[in-house]
Length: 333
Image (cartoon, rainbow, N blue to C red):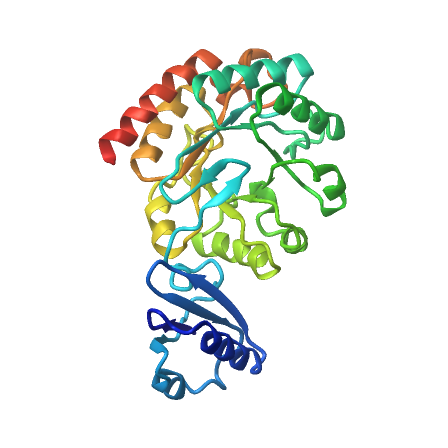
């Protein structure tokens, strides 16, 4: 249920109304807009008399929400959520480019790439320390050492770092990581999502390889319902009938998610296509579709990369792409 208060409602009366709702065992999500305050009631609202609530002189409108996701719902939070990572803002008209290699391989590699992508315009550095791989014989990442190397790259460049967590038991290793990524394989690892909900760190949540938008939003709901509202959604392609690309990049998800949720939406064209030459056109298309940012794999030596070299562009290609991204943003502004 959503209760929209009238403008300039007295703070004391608003607090009394919230406490009354809580007496029904409901959670209350408060969204303070520029002109109105929206109260989102979470839980079983069947015992709440909507006519009684609507009759209160501080209440403008009352609506019941049928969608199962509440905290992530734009109806509960009409204005875009802006997530802050240090001085960086994600969402709400801000455009964020996260770039770096699929996996951290050495200090020289990650620091060199970090410097290159920052010089080209990237806002954040991505790099995998823990790597979920289809084959048990593939490179699984440097794990704790990889996180330490990412921190060195951050110290050298000032770029906040984004890296994937696979298991809640590894959380102590991620205490100094700026943004924790949940990969496609863990989108419905609900125990992990609930643990991440106890943090205050931003979580970059990828869509499952065959996940619907509703399933993605419900995964975000697990994190938010546990207390962490700093969620960034990521469209990274879904498995389809395509036989030439790794996945099918669902760009229609960008405007649809913006309609359904207040959370920022970024796009990963690298994992979506699996081919480096396809990354620039799909990154440009995603930007035109209105995404809040991009997650792009960049490697200084793709043929010898230990992970996903085929989908990684070189630093000079990234620099060229970045200039085009700005032109597209200006064109659709």
